[in-house]
Image (cartoon, rainbow over all chains, first blue to last red; front, side):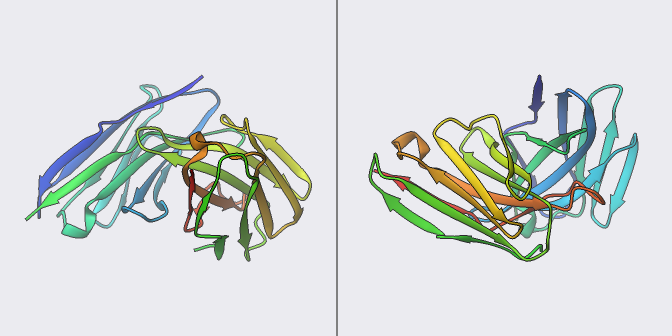
Amino acid sequence: GQNIDQPTEMTATEGAIVQINCTYQTSGFNGLFWYQQHAGEAPTFLSYNVLDGLEEKGRFSSFLSRSKGYSYLLLKELQMKDSASYLCTSTDSWGKLQFGAGTQVVVTP
Amino acid sequence: DAGITQSPRHKVTETGTPVTLRCHQTENHRYMYWYRQDPGHGLRLIHYSYGVKDTDKGEVSDGYSVSRSKTEDFLLTLESATSSQTSVYFCATTHGTTSYEQYFGPGTRLTVT
């Protein structure tokens, strides 16, 4: 079976750091995506982890531990435009995606 | 951006009527997907296609059918719309060989009254 757990909502102030944790159980696990989705818009790709470790891309970093079924997305130097839903998404060996329900990040001034 | 468009972008229809949503892509991607997104459920896969005339069911396929007669077009049909099918529908594509990253269309907001 497949199951993805992530917090429903997180609030942080502008300039701060927020870490969104995600645990997954995916048969035939092949990798972990993070997508960003602003209200009323389509999801957009942020990161993809296949191997264990940290992938850094500007202000965003994503970590994967395959043995623990765990990932996190780290958002640094938060900006107001980072207010969005962040979707933890696993992929299996067939390329099918399983989405978490999303973590709504609210950035306050 | 994989050049994905969806039509219509908004639709209101009555219970019991058939509805067809269209997804069009210009990237020649082999794989195409239809998802629905509802509050608290995240994105759920309805149907997907791995080539022209090759389709398969996702986790919430009941009440939906799909067709893919050309690489660039993937149609989703609600055979007899019900209020439980009120949702936002997203189409996505992926190359599938060089990467699994999926690119999403802008979405269609469907309301069944």
